[in-house]
Length: 70
Image (cartoon, rainbow, N blue to C red; front, side, top):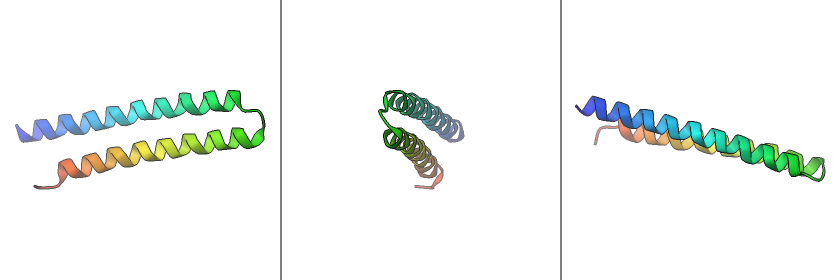
């Protein structure tokens, strides 16, 4: 039973990571479309990448907590 629960929670973390990637994609592209110059466009790209890294790190941290024996 514990294996099923941790598997489900790991899957949930992966799905949440996917949603965060989609959010980063839309936020980044919207800011890029509304950018007035190349600097703002570059900042939008950097923000998108940062949001994706943060989503990955959060999902990995969640999975590590689930897998560690308590």
